[in-house]
Image 1: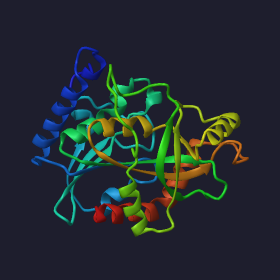
Image 2 (image 1 turned 135 degrees about the vertical axis):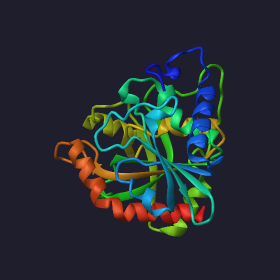
Image 3 (image 1 turned 90 degrees about the vertical axis):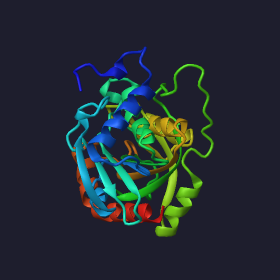
Length: 275
């Protein structure tokens, strides 16, 4: 891959870039098609080792359109995993966050690439702040809907996509057959990289939000545009500002994710097995 990212050129079709990336993944792995894709956020990484046999691991930077990870604690790998069912999973450990300033095309490139490999199910996970006081750090929560507060969209031009049932009720119901105790809530994506102020958290609560974070919503829109069924899961790493009285820190997020990782990764592996 050259230093110039083709996604930064407005005249280049981002879906062409995704198809190129998917072709490179197929060539590097020898796997013509993947069935499901997972973007593993903070706390969810161990699921990649639990869902099946990793047969190929790629440096994401070697694949067209992907960016180097900007955040400590986030990997830059793509993994092809053979599931016990015989299906193939593409594990995306190379999330580009909106706050990195690369533009929304790069943010959603991994999702579009996953769709171009053949994946029809997209599982998006993240570590996030909780607004409900009953959610203690380490609690996994299903995303039932989102509020996009980035003032941006991956859709370009006169492209109209229905976002009704964006976070598939069928998949949420399936997840609850694995863990009936799973709660759900509305995810609010802020632009970041600063954490939300207490007033912004209260705004999110008033407009119907339950979870605050800096990822996922834009990716979910792109997944729906690409025809994929979406399952979203947040790990509550902390209570949001103003709900939690102590100052927020990225170290706290990483610690909560590491502590919860064995339990939530096992949960996600069981959900994938049920697909």
